[in-house]
Length: 275
Ligand SMILES: [Zn+2]
Image (cartoon, rainbow, N blue to C red; front, side, top):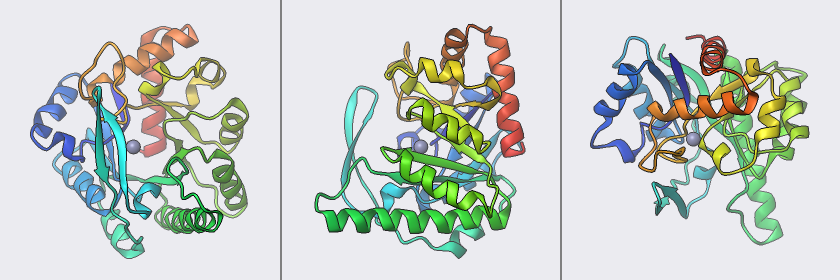
């Protein structure tokens, strides 16, 4: 059994064949957590999860990219697609209401994303400030509900670390840095806080071998981030079933057998998300 700890079957990419994709995963003993990126996709993740007694779970949260509006480009399959962000204001009560579902196992994905940033200094400061504000409100929600956090962080590890360090003295949050792509110094600091590191298909593109080697297996989560980041040998739209390729790659890098990696990473996910 494996658990894809970061999937987005709640996204439009699966609007035509959602049930089949889930069935394929469950038939192959792959459970999943569908992660929200703003209110509508969070709500959809909960709705999907509630159709299953176990196996399929949800996380709710407002991704930093949806605080601004704009057209963003990303890749699904080999194709570059464009999507429109929602410029959403974070509504604490609405997300709290969603998180009441027993199938919600985390607040996420939340954090910092400096990939597309404003060019003027003043706008940049406002942009960073807004991300931090909304992040802290969601961290508070996690604290109030006693839920772990799925952190998203792109080009912003130093700011995330600084913010978390400051919070950690008052609130011992639990969680995972999804799609970790930072350096070892940053990884070490997250690990010292007791956080897990999540790895997905990006490990086939970027050289994260040293970091994976040094990270204790007991602190690794595997994920797909589907529909994005399809791991080779697959080339089509990513899906939870393909999380097995991540487990295989981690096993290869750490020179361990596949069984061990699948068992321990599954245990890690069950422990962190209480499933
Ligand atoms: Zn994601």
